[in-house]
Image (cartoon, rainbow, N blue to C red; front, side, top):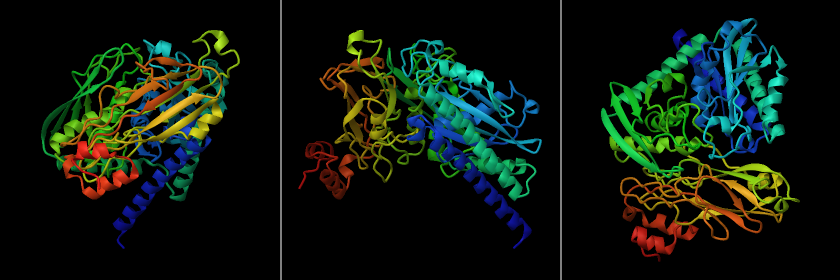
Amino acid sequence: MKTNALAAIRTQVMWNRLIAVVEEQAQSLLRTAFGAITREAGDLSAGVYDPHGNMIAQAMTGTPGHVNTMATAVAHFFKHFPQHTMKPGDVYVTNDPWLGTGHLFDYVMTTPVFLGKKLVAFFASTCHVIDVGGVGLSAKANSTFEEGTLIPHIKIRKEGKLNEELLAIILANSRNPVEVRGDILSLISANDTGARRLISMMEEFKLASIEPLARHILTRSEKGARQAIKALPEGQWSYEMPLDGYERPITIKSKLTIRRGKITIDFSGSSPASIYGINSPRTYTHAYSVFGLKAVIAPHVPNNIGSLSCFDLVTEAGTCVDPIRPSPVTARHVIGQMLADSVFGCLAQALPGKVQAESAGSIWILGLNSAHGLVPAEETAKAKRFGVINIGLGGIGGRPGKDGLATTAFPSGVGTIPVEVTETQCPLYFKRKEYLPDSGGAGQWRGGLSQAIEIANREPAPFTISAATFDRIRNAARGRDGGLAGRKGVARRGSGQPIPDKGVHVIAAGDSLVVELPGGGGFGDPTKRAAELIEADLKAGVVSAEAARNDYDYEPA
């Protein structure tokens, strides 16, 4: 075998090994995190960077919102801590929404890696912690100053010694200090795991530097993405997507331009920033809009700063997709996780018949708390104090040649939290959690089903729900190419009283919370759906006989 061929094989083996290293980093965080949303749902990211802060590999475990924002977050640390000042054992942290992952609940942890005395790489990780003070997991704040404690770029470990003073400040401002401390230490530990494995790899392959490997990875990835873009038709396409908003409806306006091997997505003209915390900082807007583009155009190309560099973003400062500090941003995924669908609306015009229908989009985070301080004291006198999170997932839009997936988070990719985990953390219990028939939009390829969830309190006391992330209650996921819209979401009390907005609402003692998640839109003309697929849906109970007649023009046997 020729020398060049052997060198190419060796390089590919090292690239694969690097991916294995960051996956172990992510698994370390997943297995040691205290917060259920990280430990059970995988709401995290992990990645490795060259000495200049360029992300060269990411773990498969994690979310686009975390990893794509983290792709540029590491370089911001250099303005405060130049590389030549860094020492072995140092670790840096921030949760700045505009320079990190979009809201205060995500800590970005960055660790320099040394081979001997030489700085050779960085590892970074992030996860969602359960509480950072302020108004908590709520969209009702009018500025980030009300939303919690912001930690600027700061050293959390110095040459191996933990900064206990900083930790004390963080924990003093959290309602769940034990869980938050555990998650922060898990982030540090995960980076240390990655660093150890990278040094072991470098020693095994006798590498004094990973920069040649990094250049190869980034060059090949950028080339692959540009080749995929050049295969697309050139032109410009626009799309508008209405969202429920908070104090007023929101419209996301997107314009896609493909020209000379470059793609630009422009959100100019989108609604102004909300006075409440549903705005998506530009870094988060970039993360999910670029993910949407790449998911259709170049899904086979590795995700790193090389492939991400092929997509340009244009936003207007002061809009809901580019809010100005200190606009509130706690529930930023209400808008941010809808941006993939907005991008798909443009791509569907450029690539007819090849882009899926709209999905439920943003996940519904069920922020559940005891009602202490929100109702008369006698109603909670004997009640347990608690604050927990669970997750509701809707359906994915129907796809060319495939039905949409049921109760699946897209585009975030997070999992759910088992009901048993939540029930062991608090006195709440799940009365039901089940598929919602007829919730997926009808189409040749049906939209993914959503689910109905009902939660009550075992104690004779009220509890609260933060509806900050509930959307598509007034604006359903639209179908594509003749497919019908998915079912709209519903949020109400078991007694029937609706939950009217994204605020914090009290569920009275003896009552329950009922949420019915939005379904995915259908793809293609419903009358073209194969009879055997409709019969299978009828047999499984996911489509009713009435819907088969009305939506599919099909008479059940």
